Image (cartoon, rainbow, N blue to C red; front, side, top):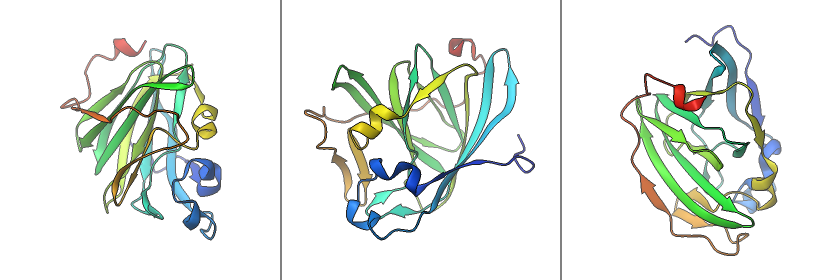
Length: 191
């Protein structure tokens, strides 16, 4: 899938300053371009294919990542790593409490499914850019406010490792799940 002729949506630091862990660094940081979203590169049977590129960088003490959102409604999404590696953090809320939270470490060629009703972010934990593709239902809407309200998800991934976000009353221990070895051939489960 070529993205050369497409203009990306760009996520700037100021777009997501509420969810950055290192508030001290944020005070003097320029409004950096953090990542690039190429949306609607392909469409088939109600699904849309996007590519996101997250250049390697640090947000102070924290590894660069996406802003994070939850799908509004019973929508799943699947990601595949095209270049580099990423960590996906998934979080399910029940009222104001985290009911479940886990991470999936993925390398080139591997995939991960975002379950319905889970918020999620993608983290670039390396010194190389990550490029990932995703399939999502075309009519899926996203909610960014619930994560902004708590200044991020339940954990931040930093140079010191995983740090709990104390804006939540209780954060369960982080568990880890295995990625899929490849993107599923049949995407009907997304519909």
